Amino acid sequence: MIQSFTIVPIKFESLPDPPYAVAYVLLDGAGTAMVNFVKNLDLTDIREAARKLAIGNRVRVVFEKERKGTIQDFHYELI
Image (tube, rainbow, N blue to C red; front, side, top):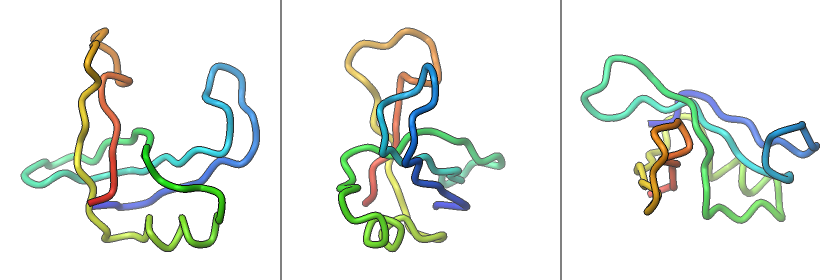
């Protein structure tokens, strides 16, 4: 479940080209929330994207095909 989120509209060094979304998520059965990117979300309309990322909305974890043992081995997608 999304605890908080942000949509980043400007470029930061070593991060993806904007816009991109990041969410702080508490997964079912977990005691600690984790932050990561939210992918496969249309960010062309920021207000609409923010509505979809609302606190309380649910996500699923998607693991990358090639894993490197880093936080980037997975991302979130809205359910």
